[in-house]
Amino acid sequence: MSGLQHALVGDWHHAVWAAVKAIALFITAAAAFRVTQRRTIAEFTPFDWVTAVAVGAIVGRTATAADTAYLTGAAALVTLIAAHAVVTRMRFVPALRRWVDPPVRVLIRDGKIDERNLRRSGLTRTDLDAVLRQHGHESPTEVRLALFEEKGAVSVLPAGPSLPDR
Image (cartoon, rainbow, N blue to C red; front, side):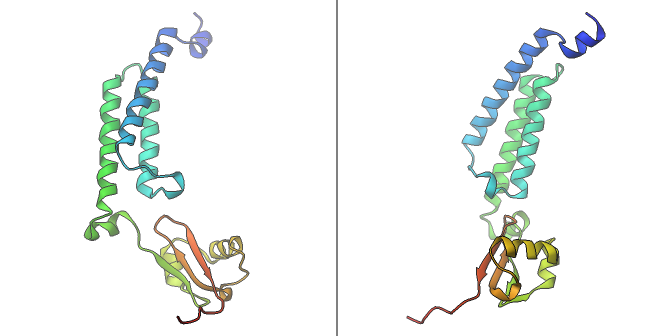
């Protein structure tokens, strides 16, 4: 087999084993994630993103590396997902929550921008203006409250007539 043919086709035995390991790792990851808390992509925290990327890296590396056994990849997967589950549970311990989830920050209160919280959130004035436009507001003066949420989204409550007392 020529060098080019080997580079493109390789050994079909390795391809079959890579497919078998990929399916086994997929099933292992799916089972491990099934017993832990489910979240949608829109609700991902930084820890969720790190876990998702690392799981993909482990599955990809283990499946395609001839020198890495399924058991090695499965051990890494289960350990990683267990660590993610522990971090997820830490969110319910008040003393540890701040380390896992950043605090909600007020970006705008009664039309006034809090520059310090804007910087702490890693946002520029241009970013904030874009978010306001996405929510249908032309300027901060139209906003009663804008919050930088734990998950990285910005919630905007418009200024308007106050609700009557009941």
